[in-house]
Length: 417
Length: 93
Ligand SMILES: Cc1cc2nc3c(=O)[nH]c(=O)nc-3n(C[C@H](O)[C@H](O)[C@H](O)COP(=O)(O)OP(=O)(O)OC[C@H]3O[C@@H](n4cnc5c(N)ncnc54)[C@H](O)[C@@H]3O)c2cc1C
Ligand SMILES: [Zn+2]
Image 1 (cartoon, each protein chain N blue to C red):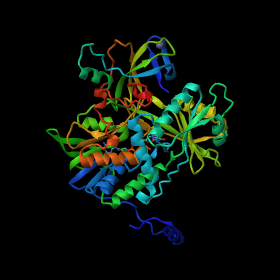
Image 2: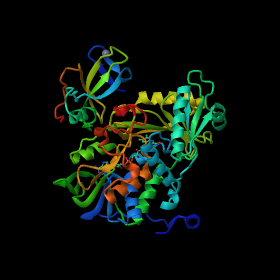
Image 3: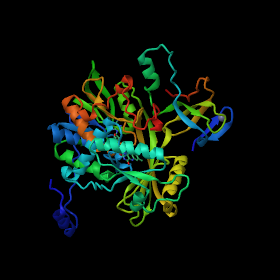
Image 4: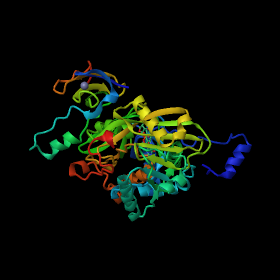
């Protein structure tokens, strides 16, 4: 398959764009594979790509119950960053951010990675101290972080409400290397690059069970027949509990719905990703001009890919509290996605008690930024049958052992993370 | 918007309540082993189906309400006091 480039685009443009071909095959499932990945979202596709590219394992199938990339990878607000406090998270998310920085070259696909900077606002002295601590932890780990005062924030984002008496903006923590990426392109780029290396991407193929012999997985049962596999990796995001239960595992996960919103397009007005410190709210402007934003989970167990009005109202009030100029814009789209919320807000990339069965899940609402790092670490874990140091802490056992990775300190309440 | 019937206050908007999760779990006795506590605090069935759950009526009588609600349709089927056995619709697992 030819590579993408300016000359190719020019030639196709001059000849009516008739030369483009589908970018991946539509193979029939084989009877058996060395590795089967369940779930064709960002993480499943990235895992398949890195299995082939980093470990030379190309006898791989990705089984997706619907169409590729229609799950959370195509529903998120596209923020990427590595501004964490806890060592387990800083190492993992920084690996992921580094992979983002060269992803377009790696995949030969324009994933529109835009390092426009992620700015977390603080509104009190206590919050400033907490942000200073997090920024220092990041710098100790070799990650960029800058603590800004009020005037420095005003220079970057003059449209913020600096006159709000209830939540005065005192400053912000800025990670300049953070930003956004084009979510759909990430799914398509990984899919195309995995397909090119021989991975079978199989759509409309739901996994409905596992054949487990003693304590080893032998095959998956699917709506398109049984498929044998030496190793099986689960990467199904919001349905992690359901698929793990097919293998007899009850995980510390609840599924919750998270909404996103987009306004009508306007000329460039917001050049960074900005998060409000007085409520849970984050916003950026897409290249098409729409303001893309979101807030809290709806807050109760749900598998419905749609949101509810009380949360909408909360998100809108945060939006106009932070950026009053948004009050005149119309919201043109709104949707929801199902999050696999873990009990400490951190993910799983690990082996399971069943030999040959591996788990990738518990991403909560922060899994988009993790996509390349998660695929890279999960591929390593599957290929070597042991975790890489960067994902070694993301086990299921950490809950029993008391080694929680509770970045926000909210305790064992998944809806609060 | 869920409408939740508090057995004490009557039907109220969800915004008066704070969600408190799975109501099928029972705190084990203090001398129970690690497994029992792991199960109580962390292990969840997370059904894509009817779910028995706690809602705390923080904006009303401040009592805990037990609710049977569907996690796909969001229909509230039953509400009751904490010590009442929940009533599940016919055919629910
Ligand atoms: C509104 C919203 C905003 C978000 N914002 C951000 C953000 O700004 N930054 C960030 O980092 N993260 C964000 N996230 C989180 C992020 O999108 C997810 O954590 C991440 O996409 C999950 O991994 P995935 O891409 O593999 O999931 P998905 O794309 O959901 O992939 C899982 C796939 O598994 C398939 N599947 C399920 N069950 C089966 C089965 N039995 N057999 C076969 N296939 C199955 C599904 O159909 C699905 O395609 C957001 C999420 C939402 C919903
Ligand atoms: Zn009440």
